[in-house]
Image (cartoon, rainbow, N blue to C red):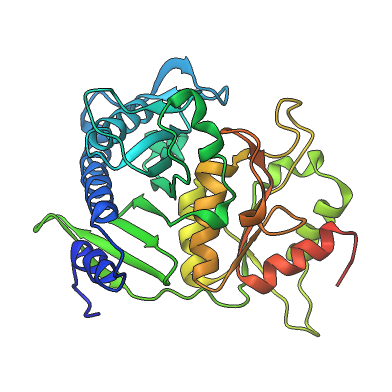
Length: 339
């Protein structure tokens, strides 16, 4: 498609390729995009309004809740609950599944999202984002008390996934299983226009992204992996550069375009999070679908993220994601093998 194609045109063109499409998914995506535009507007004026800082509360993850977290979560729920295409939603900020009010019709899609990833960086003007994954309900169940089994699907069952990045410009990157495409929001026209068509991540990169302050809490295999990145090898030409923002969506986006690996390994720093910090359903699965559609790979250190059978809505996992060969090397190190 031509550069400058709107996101709506792009979604409609994919709808036309599917003879069974009813337009329900297109409507769902349209409303999600509207929510992101509203959030983007608030993020862009954050320093001018009383929406910076923490609320004084903690979320289900025992993390400090930022004012913009609350705002973004509310906007997405309010925009999405009335469209008639969702049976329920799940948010990183909410402990339980979010039901659709009885006054609105229900549909067959499930929306899982992190409303504002990287929100601890809001006060210092670092890129943050909204991550989402969409599933299709497989049964006729509509009672919220019995929908959790419908929600806990492995990542390969996602029908779409992506993220909105609120940075120097606002971008949307998404996939429906037919490649990965990026759109940039042009404020003057209020539209996301195609700017990155058919994104492909390099097979190998030269960037690793990890919070090295956790080094002392890692096991020996993880330490050896990071030492490997930090050691130059003239014989093979190996030379990695460290780039870590601390905002998952920002680190991931950079590596998606330029190549490299983001890793958040398991550690023994916090007994409450022995298997890692990042959330399988609202962070790891959506980004895993994106990266694999772009030719990359996502692993928990043992195997594909997308094949993990979730057991809990807020399940945490280690995450190694990025260029395929770099992630494969990480898996070998975590098995105790060395280059």
